[in-house]
Image (cartoon, rainbow over all chains, first blue to last red; front, side, top):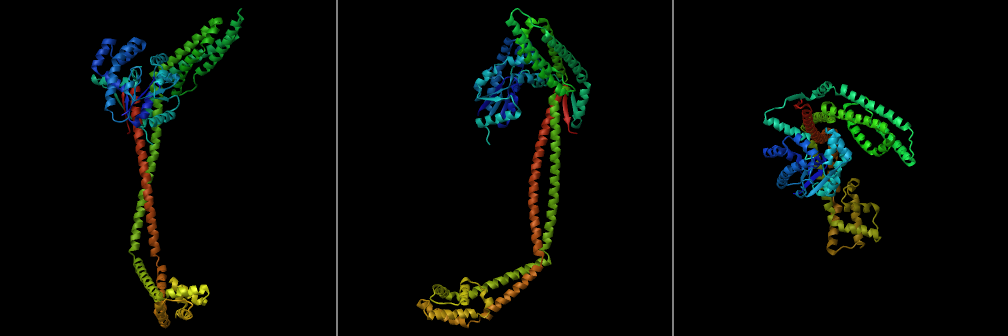
Length: 185
Length: 441
């Protein structure tokens, strides 16, 4: 059955969109997959060997400061995420919606039939990150570390504009669900 | 960001997992839902953020704003002098723009007066973003102005830096005191309160409907008993007998009617021809006899009421015989003799004792029964009570539907409320770094 990826940059509202799609099918959150992976001792061992630590907080500090280190960490994690995603997509029988933050960066597009990109204004992203506890510098660093939103939009089947209120967001989700054929009136 | 790598939610999950492995169980805090607001209020009182830290930071920001305003006033006053007229003009224009933009920015950075924790947090995030955006946007005009008024602009820059530092301090204070500043917490508490109020109103409505349903069912039961008693009463039995008798009388009247018209059956064709002959003008039939002929053909017995002895009928027979004789109406040979023979029989018929009198007796008996029926009010009572029982049945069905809908709404509200309480538990656990459990009672 069709698998739909929901992506976009940090603090654009991907999780909110995923929650809205939950009534049309099964949902997967890649964050949950990553959390599960981090519990595996085999990965923790590799992390300690490469980065000197397996602490997620410390790893975050390291990779956001150093692009090369980020690449190294991604090279470790992305194949494992891809494998797990493949498994879940194969096992699924209905519509499946997955929140995949690094869909393009990790070359996971070929696993999905449709791609939805959620967009928001940079100022909104910054504000959401500030509210999540990041400093303005940390917030900027996180936004800048991702592929430009315009490039993601170019490769999307659908774009959800999350610059307005939740009502407008829900309308867009419904419209896409109708176009996909997973919603019947 | 690495697949939600830095999400706090994930981090908490990871920390919980770690704690489980090493047996380092989190401290558990059980709170009553009714005491949550009081608990949060007390926790907030413990924090010095609102009473000391925020006012101190706001004072710093206010001081810097005052300093910048004074410096900008000075910047505006100083004449720009340069041998290069074009450059002088460019600096003057830039100065105007920079002063205007920075003054507008200062207005935005003005700390709110008597603000709530939520408003303070909103002010902090909006100010950090405004400062970033505005300074970046004014960079060019600031640079040009600085070319001639370097010291003043440097001083202004330092003050803005000081504001940025104060805002960062405010942000850290907000982060360090989530129990005070969490807008999510406020939002959740408001939502639970709203859901509680809705649940109470739905419950009240459901209770009212339940009571109405019970009282209506009781009233229906009472009326059904009343109906049963009415149906078994002496009056009802009498009514039933009268109704039966009336039915019998009507049957007899109908039989008598049929018998009378059976008498005329062989004459019908001839009578029709007589009426037609009168219409054509080939034979004149007097008005009264014509009426009798039409009444016989239509099957009405009323003519006997006006003509108890059947004299009009006999006069009509005479007219028929005379029309036959005058050949105003023509009949087939075999019909002719039969009709003539039948005319004689009818003329000898005693209509009074054979039809009128029995009919009269039947009518009299029917009238007597109808009179008795009109005196007997039990039928009306039974009808009224039956209608009332039916009305109550409809009302009970409507109430049942409304009650089911209210119960459904109640169920959904309870589910939403439970979800909100679970969210509140998770949020408080995160804020207080303890496993918080919220109990209803």
